[in-house]
Structures are given as structure tokens and as C-alpha cells.
Length: 146
Image (cartoon, rainbow, N blue to C red; front, side, top):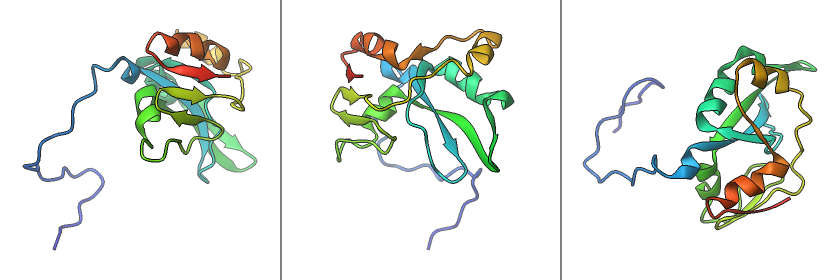
């Protein structure tokens, strides 16, 4: 029988070998940003930032709100995780984006209209719109269709 741990408890150390640490992977250092609601709906990819900038942006209380009584917030996932999250299925659960190996179809993703550029500027961050993502990811061997 296993002991139920709380969310903040550390699990006992396993004797099994650890998975390869991919922190040096360049695609772990950039992130896709999207909005999601408390109901579990998500917008699909809105734009891309460095992982560090994404953490700062999503930590800001100004990057969340309530629309028609439903709480929403910006979230991020590393490009590496996005590409590898569903390797067995060949596609991801993110709305309007499909992944096959190092290929991402971004057709149908909503181009960010600059609604939060004021906050990005205020926080001194940099973003890449959907239209700029293919050029940036090509540096890492990832093909994108927009």
C-alpha cells in the first residue's frame, strides 16, 4: 500500500535511473504562450518568448483576468515539451497545432494582435509573433507551417 502524498510533499527517491536531463536542449529555453480558462479551454499558441521571459510574463498578475465570469490566464510550455509531449500519437492536445517529429503546423493559431504588448514592454520582455516563429525555430531544425 502506498502513502498518499500532499501536493508539496517530496516523493521518495527511486533507485531507477533518471531520465536524460534535457535542460541543455536549446528548445527547452524557448516557450510557446497561450491562454487557458479555469474550464480547461485553451487558445492555442499566441506567441513565443524565451523561457525566462515567459516565466516573468505569466507570473505577472496583469497576465490573467476574468471574462464573462470565467477566470483565464496566460500559460507557457517549452517548445521541447510541445514537440515531445505526444510522441506516441504524433500530435498534441494544444488547439489548432499539430506536431509530427520536428514539424509544427501553426495554421489556425490566432495571430496575437498586440493586446499585451504594453505589458511585454513594461516588463522589458521580447516576443515572437506566430509569423516570426518559423524563422526562429528553423535555427533548431524545426519546420513550421503558418
